Length: 71
Length: 520
Image (cartoon, rainbow over all chains, first blue to last red; front, top):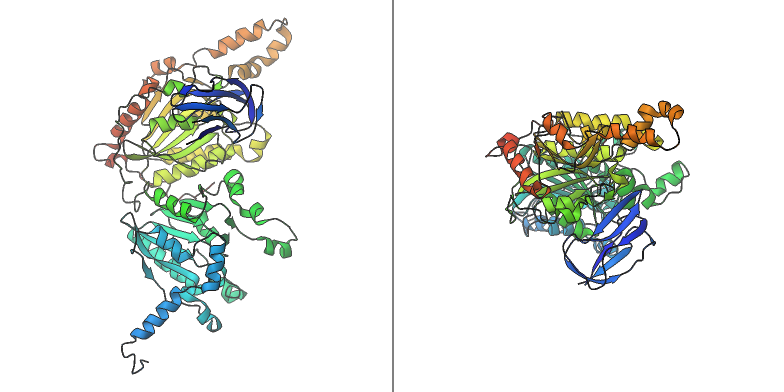
């Protein structure tokens, strides 16, 4: 069952806090998305292992764009 | 006149019943299915507990002689049934009969039965699918003046929950019903508007599409007239069943209680994962609400409409509550006119059905500027305040982080007579952001005196930042308790239990908002 963590709104990725293979706990922050002068932490809703990181620092992302995929 | 071979008229009854139940015939039914939609009878079947539908007025037909044979049930199906063993009244437009438009008799039937159902205290559900009134029925003075659709009958005053689903192209008719309902659900692809493209092209030469006039995205983001959105008919009917679980059968009852597996004093160990200590960092307030509430109990209304504020139903220790919570992830939690509108409507809804209100603060204040002022911001803010003042359900207020300006008051803040006023140690409460305040209070003075190092400005900012923590307010008896964030669920449940009393009766609302409009 693949779980995708998506961007809730448009913004810029300014930090990536996890690596491929990391075991995440519930609500762990995965990236920081800068939007509207706020740094927003994007977290996973459930525990899981990181399968793929689909963005790089500096990327501009749009609403619902996939950021991180969990196994 | 009974025939000798049908002395009791049973064959006559069977024949008429079959004909009426066949709706607009196989051709029209196939057309509906081809759109990926159910017929009205299939929808009712799907919605209700199996075999529970007791139809009323099956044999009604148009009062226009030429249309008598072409209008089974006069295009509206209605009756009583059960949803999870709770008796409800359900009605629906039959789009296979004259495109679901309302004839005089069909509308009369619906209004008559719904009024009765409401009086006896049953939730009412309408499945909208079709244009408003039938032409030629409503044309001319007799037509127009005799078809007050659907305004006949007493004002509802939120005496019973009224849920309307928009499941097809709805112009007038079902749209009017939706506009006075407590909860509106729209299936994506269905339309809710006053007038459709074909009318516009002739009336005003405007060329707008159906979606532009009443599509789900318009309502989700711009009008806020719809509470919930469904992927298809089955999803929509499932949502209706789900919504009902949060409401009593009528306003004389308290909302239904559900058993809860999570303990009421559960510690929220992961709360610091969700809420950062860095005040410049935003987070998703939905996650906080989810953590505080009973598992899988969140039902957010108007999720896409001014998302700076979250208005959602949930359960706490089995009891239904309504959350109003700022979302720092959206416009930094600054509330605009849309947030005020949806908050006001939500307060009226919850207060009318004895649902306590929980406020979670994290807002830098109201959105200011021309766009907000053009949308009548002062009115929106004060109508929200009036609603708060008239609410008599328990109100628990929790300051998570920022709570600035008038928005602090609107979130049931200090001196707003909340039952219990709680705060996290991270609470940051003031009138204005110190940087902005420096400009307002000392701007002119600084112009002359600034030596270019910014030292003066910093010192003045320091001055205005003092005392924004919750400690001083707690000392002055303005905050009842400063709590450990991990205890938030426990503290709210305790406060609610106290406000509600052992039997729940002390939490009963006086329903002073029941007569307020549905939307603002």
